[in-house]
Image (cartoon, rainbow, N blue to C red; front, side):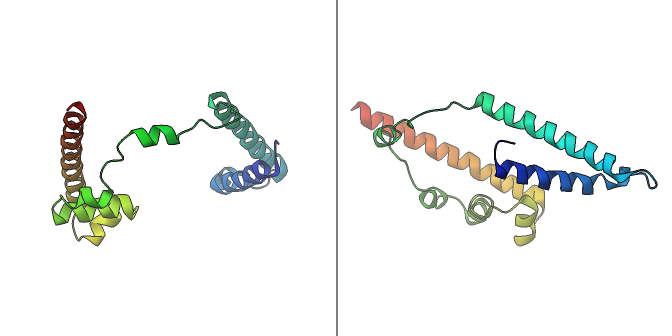
Length: 146
């Protein structure tokens, strides 16, 4: 292994996989070959995952300057400013989903509604926010052109 952290991760993954496939063990058969086979597959999967990641990463000595790009662009309105334009029910759903990190089921239970109703409110809120952002972008473009 490349480092201790990866080895620890693979060990944990091996134990989890052993636990997950414990029903495949045949009583009376030797347990060590079964465990070694699982551990070997975990190691091969880990190697493939690492190779896949490293093939797509680009090593850089110095990170590019992101500050210059951020200063040029208009940062736009804050989240609170945007959601203040939404109706209360939509604002509540979007805040729970995006700020609170709740799932659709959790939001449905918290708002005493169905998952379908939560999806519908979220969709309508996203559409309204998208339109607001488009209008603001167009106004910004017209202001910059003048």
